[in-house]
Image (cartoon, rainbow, N blue to C red; front, side, top):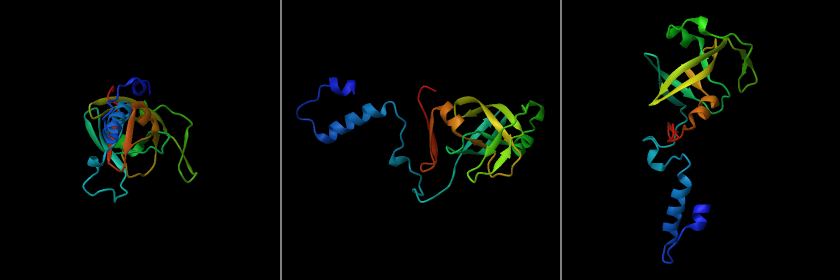
Length: 163
């Protein structure tokens, strides 16, 4: 608002041009998606947002981004596929609850160093012995740490520039 209050606006500027200038000022600190980023099939889908992640020397596909989850989830089956020793799991007494109110006791938690695009993250995951369609689930803890904005509509994630 300070910038807008102190800005010099020419008398002959059009309303449309002024709106574009103001929009650029406000978007400087915000992550947005535009219509030109909409996938070819348009918005007529209900697919989940999946990423591909690098963990050590392995590339892990089907990593679900779920802004409705309050935890990052690491299925025990993924741990076994990546041949990670179970000794690095820290036992805990966490119960992860689903949208239906049911709960699943965590096997424990694990810290992982992941590469997502050019950015590296060290994140805590709850290890669950469940059958799921994803290899990892990145929930709100990762979204907030990454300063990311997921868009299942656009099938992409954007990060703040300072990461």
